[in-house]
Length: 221
Image (cartoon, rainbow, N blue to C red; front, side, top):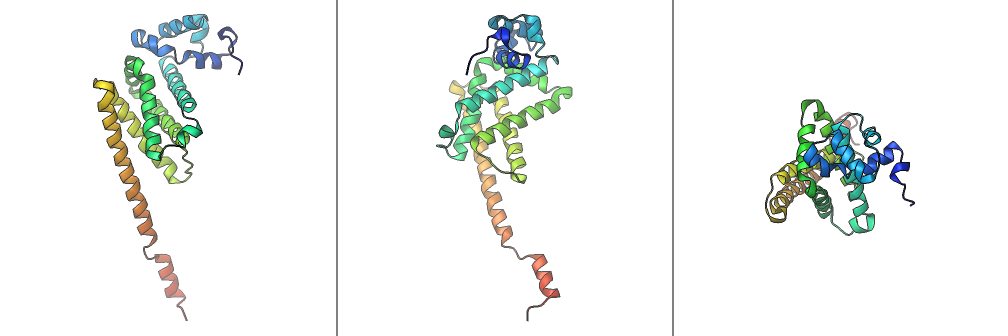
């Protein structure tokens, strides 16, 4: 694909190009116009034009960064790579990939999550966590369309968010504490999924009330 020069990009393309660059500056200048201006200078575009990409301020900047992480994750895990892994390994690797990509920008992430935790941004924060979980499951190959579609994403959203919070306070070597926490949470989820499957199987073997009533009304001859 032909590379578009920053000066020739439309605003959507420019936003995508700026998104991975802003966190390095947000760590020092916050999620602000100054951070956008510094990222714009790296690309060689006017700061005024760059700021047009984020009319809502900090939250759209954070949204764009998280979206850039999603795209990097999809590029890093094409189907031939993900297909070699068991489902547990797929989720673990995808969460760890996201942690590794934000590790150089830990302070920017801390500031971003603090902004999303504000009451007026809580709904957006929840939507972004759900979006991350949905994209992880899609890359992992999930095709559920029933209630499982929502339950899987709800569980992974909570797992991912809690793991990120542990990561922010993890000073252990090679984030061993975060890895251990993630493994334990995934074990919990796997046990729950096994229980749910066994419960569903046993419930299908229970006597059917509708069949029983039908037999009362139309007894066998």
